[in-house]
Image 1 (cartoon, helix red, strand yellow):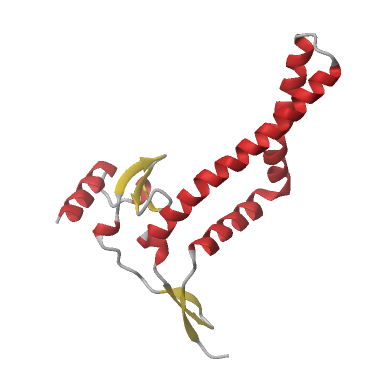
Image 2 (cartoon, one colour):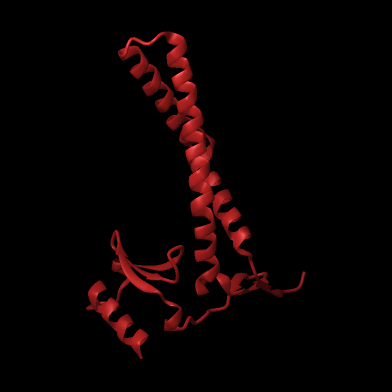
Length: 168
């Protein structure tokens, strides 16, 4: 088979689907099941406990538990309707993820083409758990670990240098 080069272009919906797939694969089915059922079980238990503490009949407690279950699931769905479009917009506006990636496949392996992003594409620099985050939107970034900085360069110095480059 001969070598070949590709230019990969992924839509925002494809990237979001890929993130979901990778999350499901990485976390496993038990975690996903617990994440789905735990709030429901806790809500039903709280509703039954509250109705028992108030001395309500069992049927009233079950009705309250059912209403709690429906309410929790509707709230979860509503949050998805509100925040998923916002996440899509942020991801779609990012220079980091919206550009095509050049890939070369050969017998030696897979190689990618280096890309240069203009400092105007960077929307901010933030810190998180020993990382300097070069943000391209609120949905994505390039993380730079403190331990990978050159000798003598602190996270503060890095942020100051980036601010100067960005202002130029």
